[in-house]
Length: 346
Image (tube, rainbow, N blue to C red):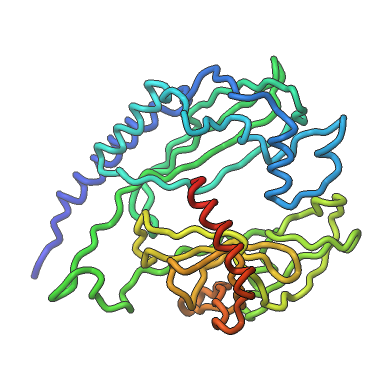
């Protein structure tokens, strides 16, 4: 008869409790104090945002324009020069997590609340507080702690909005080599599952369609505008009623990136992720298949496929068309030059 060594387990639990008590001390402490936006709210930035998002709402242009509410965080961004570091409390919290082995970080989600519209010329100030630190959590990426900060954004004395931002500071699992080789040679059946998309009441019908191998696009029943990603209301007329149309599956690469890092266990970098412009006019993100990652180019024609990642997860992906179906040589040369200029710019 054998007995489990319960003493070490109790010690581990007590150590975790003690560490979490140390982390909880930082709740309510400042993460940033009295910072000022690098630029006032301005029309050019609003225009660039609306062009990138395809948002044609007339409220965002003209003499009485307001900024799109979802730009709230944009006015606090530091740019390439960055801000000074966070407060001592915030840096100390992250340092504790690093010392505990939670050296990796990934942003998980954000929540925003809009209290008053922002208009061109508004000068914003903001500060942030460490709102919460979770107990230890085990996720597909690894084991760690969720840290939530709340940013309060003001114009003068008025609170314009709040922005909650949550990160996971975690220790990635160790990748044990299989017999006779490196992790790359392990049985692919043992590969970790792909992360699941966030499904909510606004986009549930989209993912139900994908599960049925149908790519559905939202359509406003008021003005007929198509939109993607799925939203609770129309960004053109503000209407709340909608139906769907099924995409033809034809598209072109509008832009793309090649992912090299970080190497998450469920993925095999490098691989190309494209912003695909559908024939219907909306754009969506998906992996580009059927061509080497370093051969993907802006303007590359693609067709929709559905990739069954496992028994539960189906994802839309985009397969490059055959060379004979590519655009004419002159058009491709122009697209290539555009891409090279873009790469130089980055």
